[in-house]
Image (cartoon, rainbow, N blue to C red):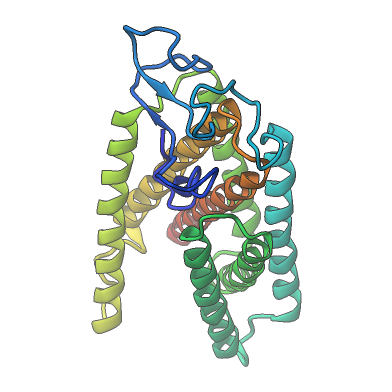
Length: 293
């Protein structure tokens, strides 16, 4: 199952000889942990990390490039990436206070940091191998952006909303993880297609709203306030949760098929990107709710 996350969908490319797109390919439904070729009459499950001379290599055995990725590898690298985001966010909150005198400068720094973070994420997304320095650099600039935006929101729009947004992000993540582990969420091709279509429509509406806001004196399409803004925020969080389920599936498949240990950095990168999205959507939704009250 290839994740719709542009970061995690790169998994398997560049492993081995690189002669083909080695993305995980499966025909759903397939029981988790099924072995390729175990049931000739059933669904086909291909190990994308097996060497060309051994296409049916055992799951979790690693590759010639080194040992296989484990859940501990994913946890450690995700903690490092998220820790970098949190650290730089806290430093930017302290060192770049958003006050009436310097608000323009603060927003300028936030915008520049967001552009750099986006550029680094795009470079890494199209790399065949993960580069830890690039991923941590993305996390650092993303933290500067989040810290500045969070400080401005707390100071000028909704005091105390940042803590609520962090707790909300944690709650959504825990809920999706529990639902995924208990198989309440069925992550298959139909689920992936639905999420991708919904995300495309959501992003198109978001771009349209930004364009209307930039070229008119009004409130764009109304997605930043009122009842429509609340609905838009809920949909954004739900989409983030759906992408998180896809990310969990990608991690599970990578461990099952013995992805190289270095690709745990792809997992950390993708999970961080999704969690940042959920946090921003939660921050906006809670700001609207507090403003309406």
